[in-house]
Image (tube, rainbow, N blue to C red; front, top):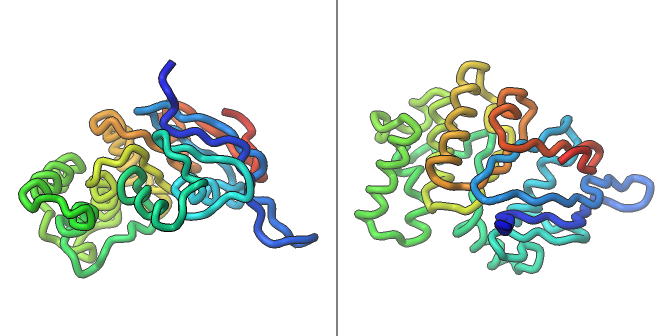
Length: 226
C-alpha cells in the first residue's frame, strides 16, 4: 500500500487550564494519501484552524504525532519547523498575505529567493505558475491593482513556487464572492492534479467538499467522520 503523505495520530491541543480550559483538539487521527485533496469541514470554533496549524508546524500539540512526507513534525525544533515550511509545506490563507509593494511575479518568487534558486530557474518557475493560475498577463501588477480573486490566485501560485509536498489552505474562498470562490476552488482542484501536490483545505463550502477526494468532519475538536 502507498504510504500516507500526512499521518495524524492521537493529537490533542488544549489552551488554558482548569475550568476555563479550551480543548481545541481531542485525540485526532487520520491519514491523507499522496496526490489527494481533503476537505476539512466543521463549524467556526470546531478546531479546524488549530489542526492546520499543528499539521504545518505553526503550533505544537500537547500529545500525539504529525508526520509529513516521512518527517515527524512534532519532534522538530524551531529551525526544523521553519525548514519544514520552506521545503515541504505551504499555506494559502483567506486574507491572501501578499506583500503590497511587490508585483505579482515578485510575490510568487519570494519562496524561491529564500531557497536561493538560480535566477533563470526562478523566472521560469514564476512564469509557469502565473500561467497555471491564469495571471500571465498580470505579472507586473501589485496586489492593490488586482481583484480579490486574482490576489488569491497569486497566493496559490506563491504557495506552489517551491514545489511543496503538502498544501494547507484555511478557508481560501472566505473573502471571495460565490462566482470567484468557485473559480478558485476549481483552480485548487486543478493544481492538485497538475502539480501532484497533496492538499488539506478547511472549508464551509459544499462545492469544495464535492471537489475533494475525501471529507474529514471535525466537531468540538473531534473527528466525526473520515
